Amino acid sequence: MTHKYKVINKSKLDSPKRREVLPVKKILEVCGMKQSEIVADIGCGIGFFTFQLAEAVGDGGIVYALDIEKEMLDDVEAGMLERNIHNVRPIVTQEYKLMLEDESANTAFLCTVMHEVKMRQKFLKEVNRILSPGGRIIIIEWIKKDGDFGPPADHRLDSKILKRNLQNTGFKEIQIADFNDYFYIASANKK
Image (cartoon, rainbow, N blue to C red; front, side):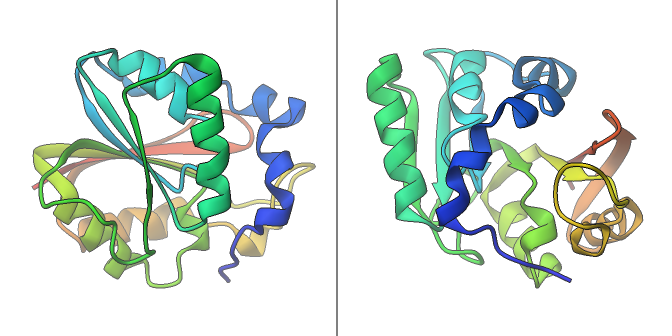
């Protein structure tokens, strides 16, 4: 079952509990973010990962902050001004049309987005389109079980289903591992 995150709840995207269970710097280290990468932060929300991604890729890199909600990107723009960040490009996008040129990103980064996508294979094909040859996708998702935080289990995406979706949409070298009691991280490369 898919559901969409409501903009009215955007303050929950930067709560103390979320910072505890999603330690941004540690996750980016695990994912091996590098200087000068061009990253599409898909479903960036208020920029929870965006600003740390911008720091990780440095002045030689770019972070495309993509979201379907303009109100979320208003928060990203305010955060850019507050932090004096110049390598983030906020873009209002569509769910199945990411508003980037073909092969325009080295890395697609998605945190707690895939469980909200109804047509996952269509969406992943679009992500594949924007990745450069050999580009990679990084997906952070809720482990499919009930917990004290996050959506109910029936709203979460089983990692085996995600793996099958990635295989069916032009990705290879798929790796999936639990990050903690709440999240798993999947990574794959474009064929």
